[in-house]
Amino acid sequence: MPDPDEPRRPDAFATLRGPYPEAVGHSSVKNNNTWSCGLPSGLHPETLCIAFGRPEHEAGNPVNVPLSASSTYHHTSSRDYARDGSDTVAAFESVLGALDHGTAVAFSSGMAAIAAVAVIKTLAGHADLLWLESMSNPLMKVPDVPAVIAAGKAAGATVVVDATFVTPLVQRPLELGADIAMHSITKFIGGHSDLLMGALVAKDPVLAEKIRKRRYFTGSIPGVLEAFLALRGFRSLPVRMQRHQENAMEIAKRLQAHPAVEKVLYPGLPSHTGHKRAAKNQQGFGAMMSFLVRGGEAASAALCNSVHLITNATSLGGCETLMERRAQYPVDAARGTPPNLNTLLSRGLKMKAGDHS
Ligand SMILES: Cc1ncc(COP(=O)(O)O)c(C=O)c1O
Image (cartoon, rainbow, N blue to C red; front, side, top):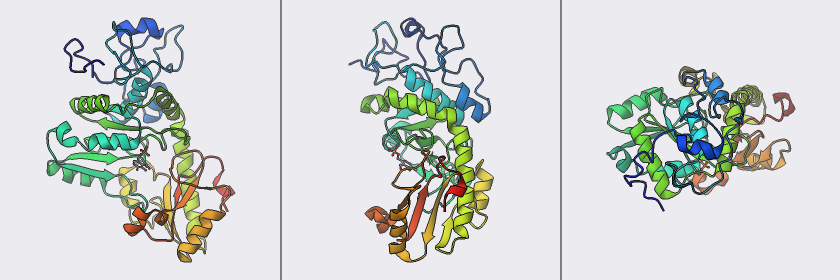
């Protein structure tokens, strides 16, 4: 097993690498080192989603990055072993890094990414860590993200924002001052409920290198199929997020007007406590919502068990609409989640809002 600190490979953890010059020959794909096709990273986010992470525009090159299914590399390459990286993962990271304006490191799940940050003391050189979510789960509380980040920075903390619910199309924490953006790629970015993957995006490339190194030692790099599918998820993310959010707004209004519903928690509604903060700090209101069902726990559970177009299941961000009663989980019940709170986990794409009844 190669030692990543070995002097023979001083650039073993270089950021955003694509195939090295000597690797180009055997992958038959010509590219620069960032999978950006020579395009500037200042493009509109929706354009970045589609244009980045591809082989160079050269005759004979494939349009999509190949599934780089190899656990090891010829020793003439600077990359020796797939636990360190692969072209497919690097291409995915180039899109996410460009979107979030930082250096992205992909992980085998969101939880693996979170575990990597948990050792921030050794990564950043100090112990203080401030962790916040762009929007809380399941009560959809919206903090004033830039203000909380500023307070954390003023206190000397490394600030991490879990932006899973919003995606870089709706909020980019590094632009708002955070040190690290965290994403469960499993959700909206993957977009089809068919993979587990996570990522951290660091503003400081040196911190990103430390994170990448930790990934190497813990073996928490995603597989190339997951990276390939997640990269494909980026291609349709702009249109999916647009539809998710349109449907969410329509459904939130209808639920609010429904006699069986006590209260709707969706930041897009002017009545929501976080509406103004979301409007100020986000480019959209996201697609997550919860609602309180009249009739308590029994009515809430009955609703989950009677839906047809909606699926009673957990997770979010796929093309289908999911719903669950959160207090069914002991951990949610223990922290006071109302027993009649149902969470609609992303408004699916399969139906127009009018198909929900
Ligand atoms: C906001 C948020 N962050 C992190 C995670 C963990 O991600 P994963 O399931 O990909 O490990 C989840 C999973 O539900 C999540 O909803």
